[in-house]
Length: 141
Image 1 (tube, helix red, strand yellow):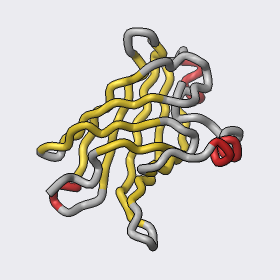
Image 2 (spheres, rainbow, N blue to C red):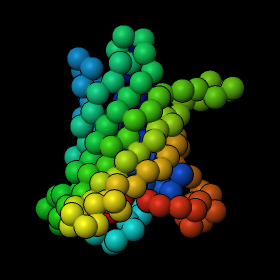
Image 3 (cartoon, rainbow, N blue to C red):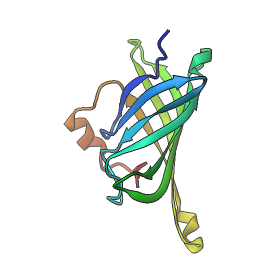
């Protein structure tokens, strides 16, 4: 049976999560952000995570370190959520995220941000992205 997490997922702001492998409860893939609050995150970033979908669960957690060949953002985002289906049996992932950015000790109260993303197999329309793009903090540095 093919793991239901495998494939390409798009969040409401147009970022793309590629889940390339799920084996033994571990997942790996790539993430490409469509937004970056600081303008730092460019290109594709490695994703690692864990899941219980191989044992008929629906829970998933994954992390991106915002460092690659073209970006050194000194920050990490982790998502924790569930793979669910809507009334029409369409899958989606809903997950809360924590973005932690490197900071000076005096600014550590501000270093971690919290939010929520929903990922779908189909990318959002430009109108949907525009409607969501100015509604809160980003999970990407």
